[in-house]
Image 1 (tube, helix red, strand yellow):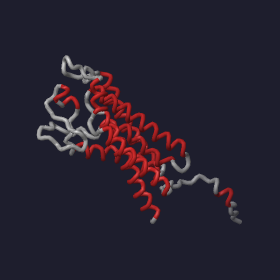
Image 2 (image 1 turned 180 degrees about the horizontal axis):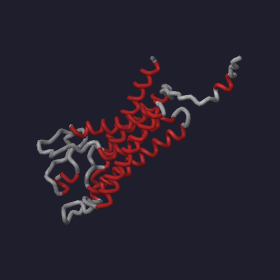
Image 3 (image 1 turned 120 degrees about the horizontal axis):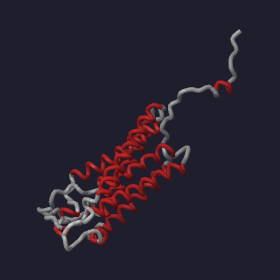
Amino acid sequence: MTQISPASELSKLKTIKTKLLYPLPLRFYGGQLLTLVLLAAVFSWLSRDEGLDRLMTGYWFDAASQHFPLKDNALLDLINHRLAKYLIIALAACTLLYGAYRRNARLVTAALLMGLGALVVGALKAVSHHSCPWDLLEYGGDAVSYPLFGAVPADSGPGRCFPGGHSSSGFMVMGLFFAFWRERPRLAWSMVAVGVVLGLVMGYGQVMRGAHFFSHNLWAGWWVWFSQVVAYGLISTWFAKK
């Protein structure tokens, strides 16, 4: 006679399960909306006359030689500008592959959100008329700068420098928040903190080289998190209705 295993034993059997997406509570989106609006107001105020940007950038500019001494610094270029970015891209790729292998929709989605954040910043940067500090008249170049919401001058230069593309590589780590929020909320918020720190550190390395103003990096973080929150809300809502 065939024996039927009790439910308690069947539950112990190893099975391949798909970890589905879960919707985040409305209070989360309300809190993030409020935070993003407040941050946008603060960043807009800081960008109104470029005072903070010029203060921080001026520290790394040599007025006598009219150039940034650290522009071609090997450590900043190799470790901060190249290696750090490649490692984070590798992290996103590994997260995507591991998530697909484990059939973990949360990890796959988090990896895709990481890429989305950097993609959004890259798209905005591609159509920006703001030139990088090392291209501006004040720092040895020939382009004219203008405030964030100011009129674009005819000789604004090559542009494509706002928001900070490199710092978005660090900020995109915040996307891992959505993989852990339900089961490990502390780890989830730690991923946000790690992403913020990486973005600011990597972005400041570019400030030291004259490649970006500091506010460019702040706005990069804003756009990365905004795009990730909106995209996850849409994706999780769509899956919840299926």
